[in-house]
Structure formats: structure tokens, C-alpha cells
Length: 211
Image (cartoon, rainbow, N blue to C red; front, side, top):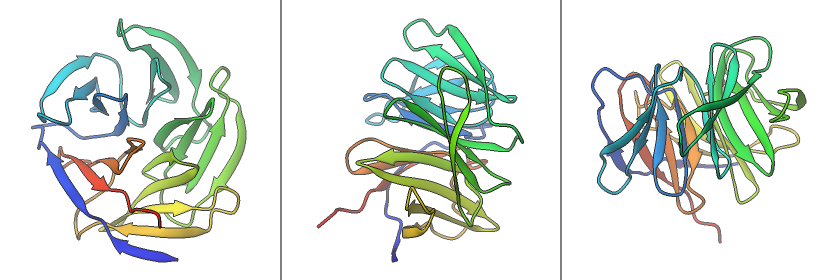
């Protein structure tokens, strides 16, 4: 297993009074959930340029057209152009949802207390398969065929690349002490975006290069 320190390349915020709950990227803006709305952050200027008023208490994802937002045991499907909720599906049973991402036609949901990541049908919410981690899951993303999840346990946080079949940890990026991860998304290039929980910050982390 490869272990590296996380390289924080930029911090956004703090956004006063906000708890960052979920993070995604639509190709231009970084969206982050903050309880009663999702916010679009311009990663160049660092300014919040738009907000959609919907319950937004956990993971956030983008499928190329829609945002998906977890709140109160359900996943809302939001038309990005209009900001309207156009559908809902149930989140996996058991609560504690703590991560959401879109990959190859499916949604992937992190579940904090059970340390699990579920692949679900985006039309029905049915759980198709489940991967177990050995740490709390606080964010999930796919990039270039790699499954990563964030973890925040005690005072320690990491980004972890895991085997998508066995859950075995293959690589970790260790966050500095007292820097937490709540929400995780890859931009498809060399960056991860991470929510910073109660710090009110969003952080960009450099994704390690592959030889």
C-alpha cells in the first residue's frame, strides 16, 4: 500500500456559518451542500456564484445534466438548469449517508456508521452491490477506474483508494492533523475536491500522478 501526505493546493472559504456536507464538480463549478441549499463555487475566483434551495444534508453528485442530493433518507434529482427537483429515490436503508457520486450510469452512496459503499440503481434506489471499508466513509468518488473514499475518524482524515471488489486499501493520502474530509469528488484531472465539515472550507487536493 502506498501512503502519501495529502497535498492541499488551495483552500476556499471559510464560508461563514456553513457546514460542508457534500461535494461534486460539473466541469465548471464545484457544488457543495450546506444543509438547506447546494452552492456553486467558481474554482478560479473562489466565489459562490449560484445556489439552489433544497435540503442538502449529505452527499452530492452530478451525472452530466442533473445534480443528485441526499437529504433526510432520500436522493433528490435536480435539473441543473432550472434548479427544480424532478425526482426522488430512497437512499439505502440504515441512515448515516455520507457520500454520493455518479459513475458509468450508477450512483454510489457512502454510509458512515456501517463503513459501506453501495452501488445503487439511479431510477429505483435499489442496492446492486456493496463494498465494505474498515473506516468510516465520509465521501466517495470514481476517477479513471479508481474508487476513492474519504474517511474521518477521531481526529484523523484520509483519502483512500480501494479495490472495488474487495475493499482492500491500495493507497492513502493523509490529511494534516485536525483537517477533516466531509465530501469528496474528483475533477477528472489532477484534483480532488473535499468538503471540510464544520470548518466551512472546501479544499482542492492534488491527485497523485501515475507512472
